[in-house]
Amino acid sequence: MASTLRKLTTIDSDTTRENLIKLLPNVAAGSTNMCLGLSQGLQVLREDNGDALGDEIIFLTDGQATDNIADCVPSAIQSGAIIHTLAFGNSASYVLTEMANKTGGKFLSSNDKTTSNQLMDAFASITLSTGDYTNEPVQLESIGARTSNWFNGTVSVDQTVGNKTSFVIIYEISSPSIYIQSPSGLIYTQTNMSDDGSLKTVFLKSSRNCRGMITLMN
Image (cartoon, rainbow, N blue to C red; front, side, top):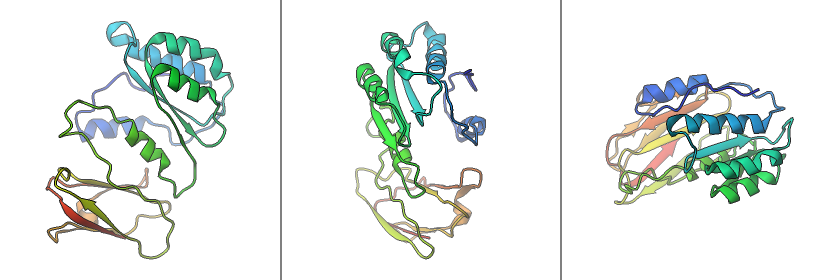
């Protein structure tokens, strides 16, 4: 079966985003009926104006399904929705590529290695454009590494970007000690960051203009 955890919601604040994150499952059991899930997603999109024409879906799957995704490709194409397919792991069907291509979406893949940033990079690459390029997010750097000691990195930020700079650090076991130094010499530590233990993710959002060489140490 497939169910809707929340109807379409405008993410207009950090609180709204956090409430949506809390609805996500923590464990994936596999054996997914992909056609039911896709059909449910299209139905949610139709609720606002009666159709899904031009709407976009990010369809994430590990490919371990109880049905045949090829059976629902024709209806997906007919819906008029743009479907981005994201295959997590190595078992996804080639049909996901076909569905993305025929609906005007993107096909992306990610492995499940701990040091892989492919999943985050995939989501970043399909960020929707608002048409206002001065306020759209720009991903400057993405690095994955396994280390038991110090890990240092530097990000170059030129004058065309740098407003509302943010950092996302994902860890495997325990939260590392993190220091981020801005071009002006200002140092951000854990007290300036948000650490979500359930997601094993540390966030830093800076309202300052950060332009120059930003150094990350953990």
